[in-house]
Amino acid sequence: METIQTPGSVLANNPQLMSMLQGRLGGLVGAPSGYLQTLGPDVRRRVKGLKSLQHKHAALEVEFQKEILNLEKKYLALYTPLYQKRAEFIAGKVEPTDAEVAEGVSEDEDEEEDEEEDDEDKKDADEKVEGIPEFWLTTLKSHPQFSEIITEKDEEALKYLVDIRMAYFDKPGFRLEFEFSPNDVFTNSVLTKTYFYQEEPGYGGDFVYDHAEGTKIEWKEGKDLSVTVETKKQRHKGTNKTRVVKKTVPAETFFSFFTPPVAPEDDEDIEDDEDEDIDEKLEADYGLGEELKDSVIPRAVDWFTGKALQYQDQGDQYDDDFEFSDEDEDEDEDEDEDEDEDDDEVPTKDEKAPECKQQ
Image (cartoon, rainbow, N blue to C red; front, side, top):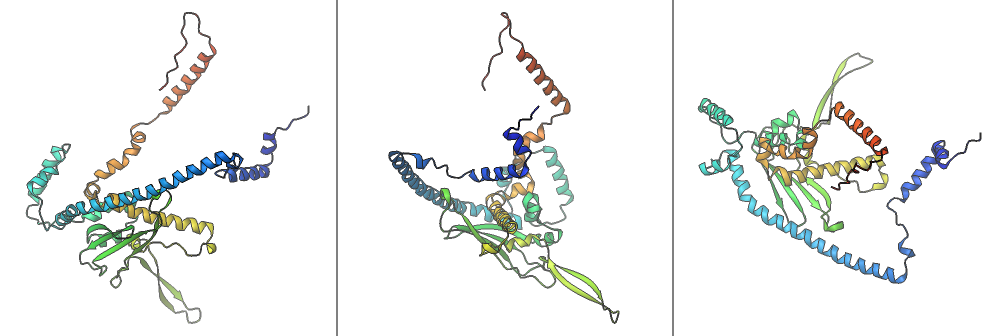
């Protein structure tokens, strides 16, 4: 009996042909269909009219994004007094009033926890503690993205972090300010990171990230956290004497945040893998800045207490609350089989066909 080869079997038996065909089809995805060229002149004229409306819409989108930026600047000015008082509470310069403490108590707080805290307060009454020690270090360590880049050595420096602020400036963009108390790691009192947007808006009127600039950290002698000193012994072949060679190599540190990645000026000399790596670093760096601006600074106390994590994990609540066992899967399979059998049966006169319920 002669075997008849279908187009599918021919492709299955010829992987090279299959790969070539998939490549060509893949190139058609997202490409112009040429449909517009097949339309008559009257229809093409109307399409041009639609484009005119789209241009006007794009101009309004640009104005919309500018209004949003102005609104953010307006409310940052309103938030700033609260941020300043927060910094005073943290530093211990000012104590909250009884009314502020009462407003800060949540309705769902556990009374037993309050009693335990009162007992601890009585025990530690003799120990005077100013402000809230290691507030910003704890806040950053509670955040999933920042906890991944903070090392043990970084913690020794971040203990001196007393405030994180942000500011806008005339050009589209924003600046982050990290204030430190005097320490034995670096001489800077403030480390800044500035994010700049491109002057021309992107599609939809959004501001497009351009580049970032950070403060040069003035490390004290032997305290540079961005490098590690490796010590190796070398033996001279002739004299058999040994010598110690020290070499500095880059080290992972949170403070690399202030030395942002830079996009290369000439893309032609870059391999595809290197280009993707640079893009990922730029995207990650910008994401950290946005997270500080939009989440960490406005809701610092929620990150400090861990409350912010509850809201962040709500997206995974379904997966956390429900588990499917093998028995459930077996039951589902049995139900599917029963449904298939029922489909083959024709309802009798006395029986009613199942209703089709649309949700």
